[in-house]
Image: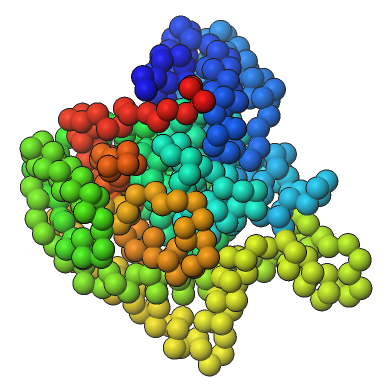
Length: 498
Ligand code: GLN
């Protein structure tokens, strides 16, 4: 399908440039996006919350600032979708869970997340809150208490997870850019499944203040976009130190837009053997290898490397992440936030009933697992060993980055599977993350960008991983690839012909 040049088909860079010059009204852009959302939502269910009037109000406010000659900011008029585990003041924030969304008693945060504050300061227009696996736990969006999002390329398939709503919206042009969070792959994997670019920044690069915590030593917020340039724009706006997040790094934010145009001449790209050893679908491997050839033709030097502890990634991640989740989710007790089961007789009864009714199966499974691996007698055997494996994984990367500048591999071993295919098999679902969790365990930046489609027309993702705080280098690789190819311009047919 050819995307028309109505504002919803434009990129963030073009929107902001035209809005800043007064050639395009932010209100016109917002109306176009709202129209697009209403046309696509019946098929996709990417959004959990929308408020058209609030969107238009903010857009008109921005147009007034432009008319007054004020600087409207680097994201002036750019419509952005926000994953529903990020706090937006006064707006229902559910994390895809019943526990935060009891009718009439839903959680409406009294403050904005650090990243939301920065987006607003940059002139962006938040469109609404997007669907996700409950508390970001999942790889298919099917763990949302509100029903799954569908993949815009094939509605019988998953959009990936947990940030499935954000990825699907950007792919379907019902958002120009979006925010997601990535604890073990939740930005990169849905980006791969939906054929968009997703970037998980270095741990500490972007503030986690106001992100509903899943696993605090792994969680990071990052952008979805169609082009490297747009991802660079959003990252530039949200990155930087925030004293309200103790793990936020005080590291200067470079010019990411400049990085996109840097090219890859002379860049050493490592191809980790182990990332092709897991059963990667042949069509995925073929697309990734031909993407590597494109990068080589653009001047990069390819070299095989080894990350020998990769096979420990999944067990290590599912111990560390569940341990941290069991602690983080203790706060949802029926007293502080959201749902409180009526009729409880004792405090314990209230906790028990609110949590039993409020949490879905996968969240309960993780709380049980996490409590188990932290319990006396099992702590050393599981949690401590997982921390040791984490150190080995981190060292693998450090060693590789002595030889190469970045690593390139598939994002996911397979393309989008069918809704329902893995919901009853938690281990099969966990295995989806085999190529993404290692980056989180090592605290590194990782990016996924579309590099082709399989025989069924489903998008394939190329993953680029780098040393800490080298997001610019990843964007340079993405920029060079997109300059030489057109995969990122392909759009699914949704909401047009239906
Ligand atoms: N799919 C992984 C999980 O279920 C990663 C989720 C995420 O990154 N939030 O934990």
